[in-house]
Length: 205
Image (tube, rainbow, N blue to C red; front, side, top):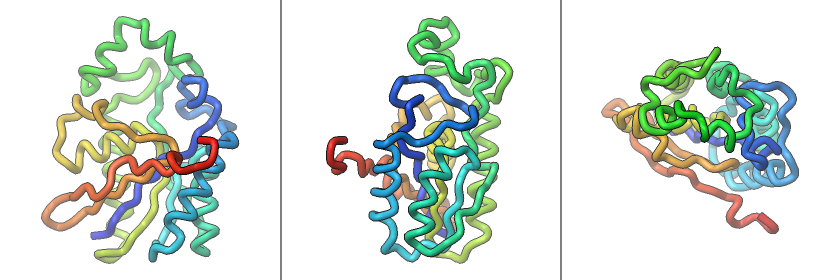
């Protein structure tokens, strides 16, 4: 089965200000985020990538577009790669949410948490992994495909395919504009690269 390059979208002002964007529309990359997207395209353009898939949210598509253009491919939207639905927490400052009693469950026992008016982590994990399996099934073994998504879905996918308990997924880190490479083989999954952060080499980053 193919090598999946799981790319987190670049920085936007919600990330910069520590506000949870969730699925809010019209959340675009900021200047640093656009630089990160271009850096990802520059780093990956020499690889024989067969397809570029993206979450339908603007910040993900704006990250995927430079890569697709550099490869001469069409960017394909895939709703299964979308950010988790955080319901009533959309647009809320992280600083305020961290003061809630339930925040301890979000961090320490996420398998039992459902966002008010939104998804449960376990449902998000099932969705993203089903989507990645479906995308892998569209390609030949040893092919490379890029999937632009969001931090929690990527972390949840890595945890699942490596056999980690869902309650440990918050221990993983996925930075804006980073690349995580996951090989889905017949004998199991192999994590090739985790959170390869190109922004460390960007001027002014």
